[in-house]
Length: 137
Image (cartoon, rainbow, N blue to C red):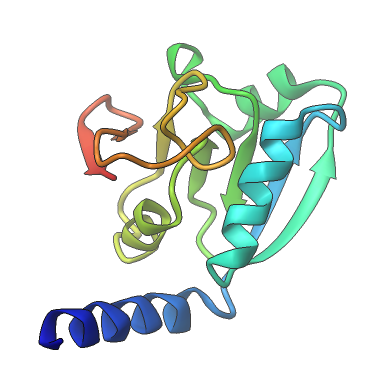
């Protein structure tokens, strides 16, 4: 029972911190998994502005996303300018926001164990833009 209560308190704390954080997501209008990821962010308490783009390559280049880390959508934490590439879980975004010195994080490609693609299974690796492991969810 104590473990369950602790988990609820931690989850509530994460949602409270996420509440009020605004994220702008650039995505393809026809991509269902992008919409799934946006839903994941909203369900996690983030305020999301989704912008459809016909030139995601230009968006990624402008925001400094390393080419080899590209995925189907790119987002920016509005307050800090930190970049989120791909299907990064909300817990990793929370960690990113707490570390303003980190410019950006990515889940390269479109792994099936990522929000918007499938169920998290504890093996999803989020990396920082230097390629180092940032979070595992």
